[in-house]
Length: 251
Image 1 (cartoon, helix red, strand yellow):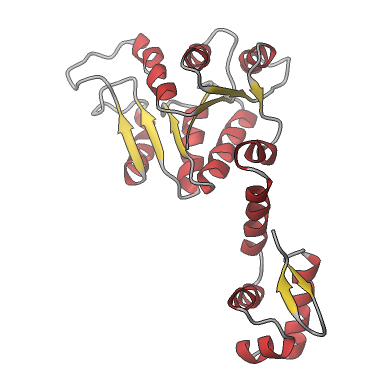
Image 2: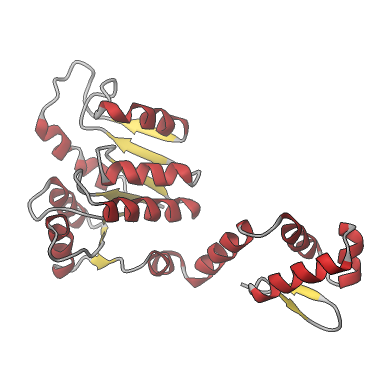
């Protein structure tokens, strides 16, 4: 699946954070993220995807050898390591302001769905949303503060029928189903565990179940084992069955 995330260049910290988190969560599920590598929302989306180890594509409004903005050169280098940078303009093309608006049709055309995070009521992002509708792509928008100009565009799109994103997990459930979100939560929990707790989970995955067997395999003290298995049970990662036996809780 390919999803484009776009929005205002002069965005709020809220918008930047949402774009980053959405891109990160989607990249964890193998979604390719496309954006325009502009300031603000675009940059946050690319970074979120890359930080999650995902693949991202930037579509430029300039020739491919003229990275804009120049402050994103390092970001461009990261994108080339885990994605691609595209442009329809040849190196000798003189950059025009309307090129940035025109490239949005490519961003949308390469995507299965488009997410607008923040946008003014009159902005290039609105043209992107229009392209999504014309091309039959699913269009999502993030609700915003009704008093902020950068939220006016998204709120207007929602009024016109765009799908609202009211929570990252809710959005993932809509796309992939509840089981994916449960696995994501479980993975997040596992990443927060101690090394010993992760070893216990690994042994359970391999088929060990009895407390004595686990203690013997891991060569640990019974007290340490009991402490860690209790924490795993409280976290909902494992459950007991029989006498002194354990299993991973089903998703």
